[in-house]
Amino acid sequence: MQILTAAVVALAAYISVTSAAKCYPKQAAPAATTSPAVDFPANENTMVTDSSNQQTPTQLATQYNNGLSSVTRINGTIDWIAPSTEGSTDETPATSGNSTKEHASFGDITSGNDKCVVGDPNAYITKSDVDWVWTERMSKNVPDFKNNIFDQLVNNKGKLRYCVRWDSTNKLSKTVAAKFEAMLNRQFKAWNEWVIGYGCWPFETIEVKIVGWATRDTSLFDWSDDSLGTIYTTEKDPDGVPQCPDACYKHKGFAANADTSACEGEPFDMSLWPTLGQGGGAGGDWGHRVDEESMISTIDQEQSIIVAHEIGHGFGLPDFYEHTDQPNEDFPACIMKAGSSPTVTPGDGWMLRRVFEHRTRYNF
Image (cartoon, rainbow, N blue to C red; front, side, top):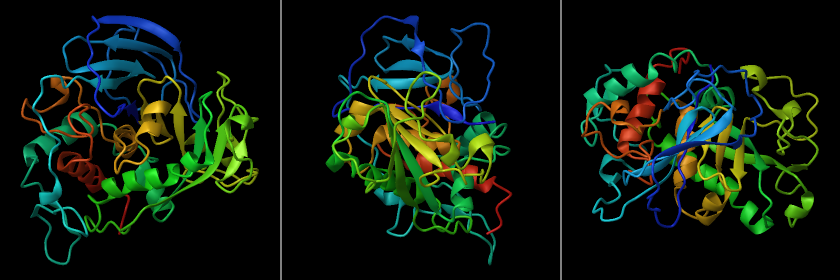
């Protein structure tokens, strides 16, 4: 099953939400490259915070006036738009005390001598909270799914190739487009810090390269050569949205290495899907759908909250929107807990480690 969950939208300042609670249908979300058939509950108002499948039904948006966030259900999962911080004194959680220059703290090491280092948290988040999240939120679906970002990195020896789906009528300059790759590399660096040296994870760096661009019309780009990757205009999904060629998608049908011999460009692992007016996002092993204007406005920031959050879903981490999604009311700020942190925190890092610890098919 494919892991799909949802995203965050980061603007320069968080936006307050004041609208009353309501549910209403939107236009159908464009299908992603690997979209399988999915059945949905009879009650379309049922809110689902994490899902094991990539899903592409009609979107439903639900907005709450509780001062916390505006939540959008996209592709069958919950997606946050922007939390309200009006009157809040909360600050961005500090994480530097949990890290060294080489890797994040290993906490209380529980592995024996001459074994791959594993441990339990001793700061920021409790072991019991991390264990609860694994048992209650991830253990049923994550271990058996064989195409998440960990799998792709192992298969590619620490490298990932992306194709960009420019789902917008806004023009994109080469100067800005050239920043996409560096932005993705920064997000993976923030996540990878938590597995460097942990469990014998062999990749101290993750190399991300953009190899293709899909657009409705080449006139939306102010460059026409392949210096940033092959430009595609002919292939579209069932909703007419430009997509990168199926022939180039390495994981079609959840394969570790699908046949890409017919690819006219360079094969890719995932898609970065900036969408005009998305107002939210979605993420999974197939890539990350994000709000185009939000992503562009934060393209130079060290961490892009929306993209980093979506990458977390690609690794297998769930959302934490409802109180029932969390072990207790003291669950700390995490980038996966929308609106609580704009950066990857030790809470996110230890949950990532739990996922990695249970990937028993790796033997480093």
